[in-house]
Length: 127
Image 1 (spheres, rainbow, N blue to C red):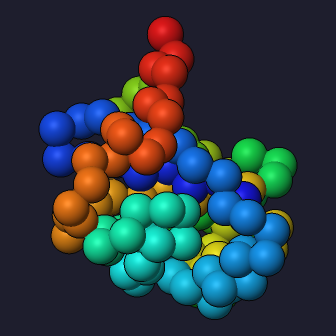
Image 2: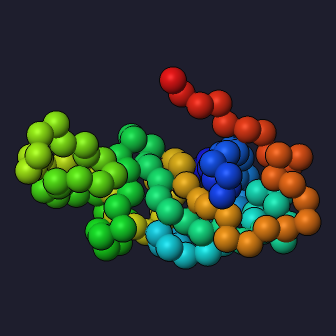
């Protein structure tokens, strides 16, 4: 499982979570806070803001559980309309983390003593 940490200044850093610690995140939800020590950021508190599963479907905060399902969407994660008022039926993942989640997006809520850049490598921005 990969964890992407975004900071207040707009930078993002990535880290791979060890297999033996993945079970600690199961049943966590979007909006829950986790300890940064899971990925080597002692003293940091991270808030889960989203993610995607192993097939690329995004997590949505308004879908209960960890199920995958189709919903009608007008905006938000997983759909960008081309025209005003356009709707589409898209497949998304629920807000709960399970072992099929491939990437978890987080933001820093509380900073620790060590700078993030010293511990984690910076994510390359896709252009």
